[in-house]
Structure formats: C-alpha cells, structure tokens
Length: 152
Image (tube, rainbow, N blue to C red):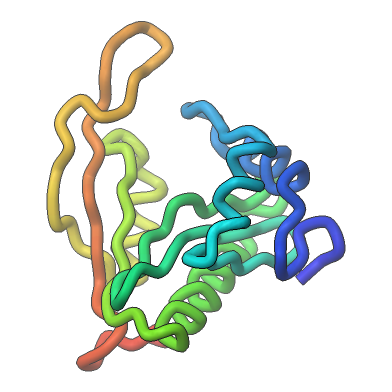
C-alpha cells in the first residue's frame, strides 16, 4: 500500500486515479469515495498506482471499481490488486464475487475473463454515453470456493 491510497484510502487520491484510468466513463468524486469507504461493508485493496474497491454483504463481494493509472498499466498491477481483493473478500466470508462492466469495454472483459469471471447477466442500456446513447452492462461473477479460489 502506498501513502496516497493507503489501507483506509484517501478519497481524493482514489478519485484522481480513477479519473485518469476511466477514460470513457464519468469517475466518482472524492465525496463518493469517502461515503463508500465510511461504510462497514467497504473493502479496499490498494497499492501504488492501482486500487480495487468493493463491498462485502453477507457471503457476496461486489467489485465497484478497479483502476490502474494509465502510466503504469500492462505491468500486472491490476491482476495483483484484483487477487488481493479476492483473497481479502474470501477472508471476510465471501464465497462469490460479482461486478458489472460496459459491454464495449473489450480490455476489461478480457481481463476479467482471464481471472475466471463469466457473464452472469445483462443490464440493457445501463451506461449513458456522452452522445446520448446507452451501452449495456454485462454482469460477471466467479466463485471464490470450489476450486475457483482467489489464487486461481
């Protein structure tokens, strides 16, 4: 973990990193991050230049945001931070993890598939686009148990 993101998170640093990483979507504000981090269900794994933020509710983990600074992409940071998140989620009792990703985000879809996520649902027209159109969200999930552990 680095000083700017830290174990508890620095909302302004998280918002700034997400703003650099999320080129096609509106990033969250520092207040959005602060509100989520204040909730007892929040789970943040962070290291220099990358973070994964989600929540654990009962036995399910949800990834809300995963970001790597563009200047540090393609170095394995996202994989490392995702695996840290999966391990921490399993340690807090989660047996499955899910997320949503824009159907047009080819790189993210390939990344999550590489890490054992499969499409489990579809939200038609979920993400608004700058031109007024809407993009579908794919729901993806994977087990954290039964041979699909966080190190798989």
